[in-house]
Image (cartoon, rainbow, N blue to C red):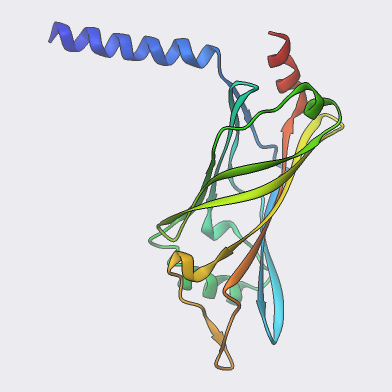
Length: 193
């Protein structure tokens, strides 16, 4: 038991020591993630600002994005359509969509004037994880660092049955747009430390 207590103490100390050197910048409440669905009869958009996540950096050459979105937070402006979406994506079983990026860099130029970077990561949707890649336009906007990304997912890649309207299924491709904001000063303060 003494050995176990020492191991637990070492583990706790390592967590506290590493967290001092880590920057965690949550997404601001004005951040939005949207999805765009399509059918020959009409197109629609579902939007959410109700999600958790942010950018985590060990240093500015080793940053990751982490996002967790409750499926039921998307609002298309049509409660019947939203209920139908929740049914087909089995939101009672798979409550969240998550995305975890691979490591990427944020440099002084990015903080000052912005840049476009390629970010890769894993999206977990409907219980199936898939690698994805997206171009992210990062730019400073007033007191925020803004990141805008557009990418697509395919419903069949995640074993989601496509609902039909008039016997015609919706498009297999769902377009995603992320418009994310983080406090710029947090990154600048981290650079100066």
